[in-house]
Length: 213
Image (cartoon, rainbow, N blue to C red; front, side, top):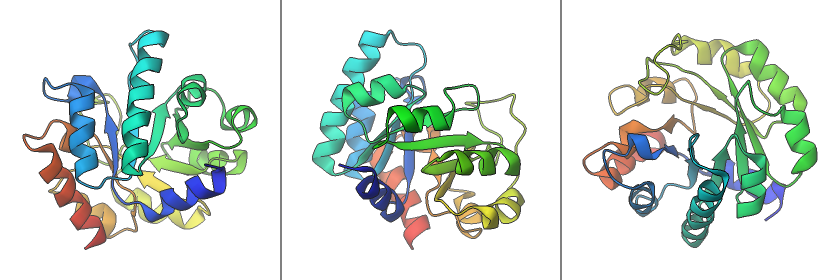
C-alpha cells in the first residue's frame, strides 16, 4: 500500500488503540490484539520499548499478519527499521526519536506520526512532513505519570493550526472521551482503557460508538 492509500485509511478510521503487553492485564499482546480487531478498530500501534530487536521484529510480523487480515493499519512505535522490516503501515515518533524529516526520507511510503505536547512541536512536525500528529497527554495517565496534562482546551487552541490529521492521547476513557470528541477529535488514542479492560472488545466498541455516534 502506498502512502496516499494509507493516509486515506487513517482518515476514515476512528479509535486508535496502542498495545503494550505490560498494560494488558496479564494477557498477551496478541490475545488483546485479536479482541481489539474483533471490535472493528482500524488503527493499532505496537508499543514495546524493552524487547530485543529480534523479538520485536517477530512480534511486529505477527501483528502485521493479523492487522492485514482485518484490514487495519499497523503503526510501530519509535522504530522505523522494524516498521519497514515487518511491512507495517507507519511509525510513531516521540520528540527524542529519529526526526520526522529523516524518517520521511528513509520510509517515503510509511505514515510518520509524531508526538507533540504543544503548538510549537505540532507545527514543527507538520512542517517536517508528518502524516499525523498526536497531541497529549490530555488527562493524567498511568503510562506517563510525570507528564503534565494539557487539558481538553489545548485541542481548541492548537488544532485550528493543523492541516494534517491529528490524534490525541493521555488518560482518555469512557468517562471523558466525549470531551475530546466535542473538540473535534476523530482519532482518539487509548491504551489501558481498552487493553486493560475486563472485556477488551466491548470496551473498544463502546469507545468507537462515542466517536462515530
